[in-house]
Image (tube, rainbow, N blue to C red; front, side, top):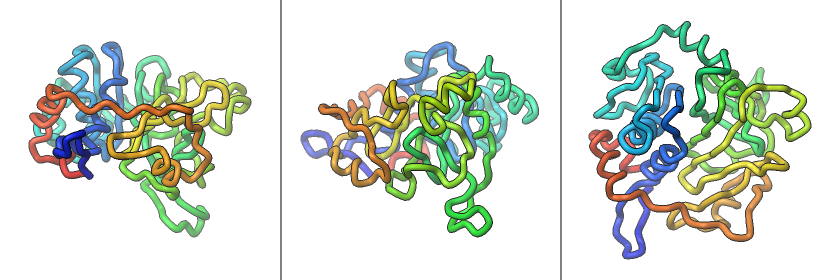
Length: 264
């Protein structure tokens, strides 16, 4: 899906916009980790390194490579091409880092379902014994609660994906709200951002429920409301997501020479 500027010209795709929005939330002192289907966070991290966060470290979960050089971007973190990197770790070391709570600052997450409190489900939709849809399993998502910030991204924004409560808790967000989250004593800061093809969302500081932040160019609030399967908090005024700059798009497309993000 492509977006239009005010003069009607096609200039960027929704996926490119998502990568830019994720990139803007990364800091120079971050150590990030991502899972398998991760072209968007791959580009987000490399874009941050090339602009405002040169000292950021990025770990590709599938190959356990550190700071993949990219160019061209590959669709999966399990691609051997990502071993063109500064270095690589063993899978055991990456798992240990995910569990420590004092190393990784950002975890890029997603799922078959994401609920109002940012909990993610990557296991099964429906009854666990006889699911309507079975996913790959929890993978690294149980470690979400031990990472500083969780950035959620998904290319599906519909009522099947965004549900009031996940059918299976693979990766904890804010659990079932403030009381349970506080009682849990989990060390992470919880989910901070959700980026989809329609909008960006954060979380209300009091209720910890998902809250609309911006709508992407060409999208209105009612589209987002209709595509969300729970009562999304919507502020009185919702700005439009800023368009990527010419520099951001130039850097992004120099990395994404296969155009994985361009047509979506």
